[in-house]
Image (cartoon, rainbow, N blue to C red; front, side):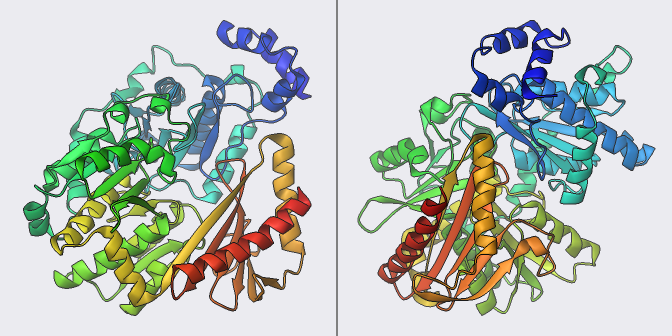
Length: 566
């Protein structure tokens, strides 16, 4: 059917409720809007759906959530044993518009298919969902969230029995099941017979999760000693982190935690924050203001589903600087290694895992300590996959730490996705350690740069929305793939890696990476969750000025190519 025919079907078909029909009738004169909502189905990507909340096949709504869930149910029923199916699926959700409704729709559709569905009594973090999958021994998990996207978005992520997001082969198979559903009215609905398959969880899961997080504290005596005085400002950005992060910090010994009041409670509008992303300094505006007023040394912000954490620290000038994901990851790598050494806990077979678009800062620190470094594709599920493989091989390798440049970290193996609860706790511990030495985190970072070299990274995100945007993204990355780019910033390109060929023992992925003769590199990849093309720039030099010059030169070359193609 054409997009107009699909639109007419939604308007005329009484399967769709009256509210949906009226919403669609209101846009009947807007051909462009109708096309964007109906020219395709909202794609089930590498782990699920993400889209604008609205009526339409290319939007997230109760109908597209039902369709995705029916596809997931069909995959489970066709590819697992009766015993595995009986283990059920656990579902969590964040604070976004329609999150609770989508959670209920997911549970009801699974139950209608004969699959038990566990749901929480309110919002929960993504890492707790990952933990609960393994704790409850379910066959799968679902979390309703759009992470750090603007308020008009929501999403649907699927996890498998190991607690990690589904791997590409399972995601592709689920996609096939979803694509086979053409008629929404064929999706089963909950009946009296199977309503008991929806099970409400109590707070035992919360306590078990927090206890697992607290086991990752390394210098317990230090935290107990310094934690009473060390002042922290924290904001959950109106999301799921407020209760678990504060609880973990308090129970570990951090008693001086100030919370940004405007952003403390769940709010689908995020207290007016346009982009609730802890990577963005604007999202930490209120937190930094509170820190200045109270003289706090550390500001932490978790995103709505609490799987990522951003940090601002007081500098020697008294101002507050945002740390990048690469800086936080490198510092945590160093702190974990040095602390485990001090406690005689560092394993010789320890492995640091990072993504291919993450800088070499942490990697160089790990290698200097004779530890192995593994690179994986973007997506924390690939880090989770490595943890699983270590366990399946009798722990011949020990997971030390894993992270990605986009502010995602996992300390410990209680979860198999990035966890901002445990990361916040370890960042606080690390900051308290430097505080005990009369230093700030900022000064600690400069100390590491003196030892290992100065690293700097920058990400360029080119947003190209809609059908035309997707086509333009494909065109630009095709240009890079098919053009012999010999230099950037007047430095010779010494190697090009095209991960679409399935290289370095990794699955195929639409990523290109250019290595320059001066240790700089550039990666190009389309975002898996947003209508963006991303360019990752990473350089190394003797000081910040030298690195700034290198980044500027590379950016200028990328801009010239992109502007020519736009």
